[in-house]
Image (cartoon, rainbow, N blue to C red; front, side):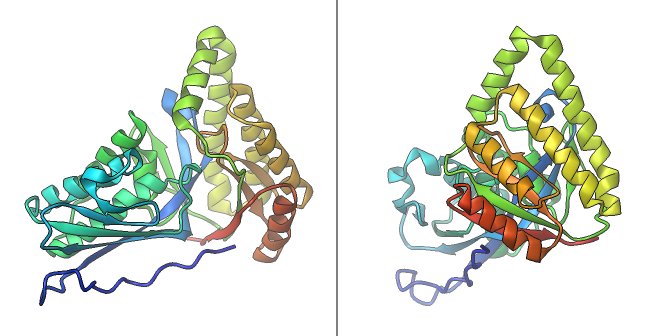
Length: 329
């Protein structure tokens, strides 16, 4: 199921008469293909863009003396916004300051097809779209690092001490390798079609990271071995991606899911969805993101096969599925 991308919003009647300036920005979701949790301990991770799941933001000047937000989650002033919106407010203020418009009163409109709390980079994507909208409004171009820092400031509010992979991945055109803050791109030898399945439960990155830390304290040798194996899977996947070898990638995904289970971040529901995808013909499947909820990512052989896998995942209890393709490059 691909959700439609909203059209560019029109200025509202509430804007100042004669002032029809508007800045628009977009960003997309991401999925961690390999390396979640291991990346916290300095291992590499591979992320893929999910272009079919997009967020669009619009920023326009307003005569009101306070930042206003319009979204599916909340509509009102920044001072009355719930805690959930703090990363968004942080992104707006950081972006306006970065483009030299810190004193300007604005209204932010957010339209997102990215499900919240599912490990798909929703908060980072909104912040990235906000940064682009602010730059568009001001008629300036943000440098890559300036842009990244705006998104990271919002991510720190959302997640405490983020690795930075989400901020990079939601702005990348193709798959990336992320290692100790550094990013490189990788080739894709053939189109890769993925099915995402919502487990029906939100994930908790903070809780999952804490659980892995506790287990590592109790069993450092065993946990370090699992983290090393996750690192090897991530590095080995680079050649598979360049060759477009779906079979090899799928086998790595299944192995990675088993290792993440050993780290204690899978659930019965996530395991069941992985099994259902594999039984339906997926080359491989795994949880993606922090775990303890969130989504499963399954690799299909084709878009036609993806339809069959999506049906099987919904039959196995996934309330929502999405299909997305990473183009060859």
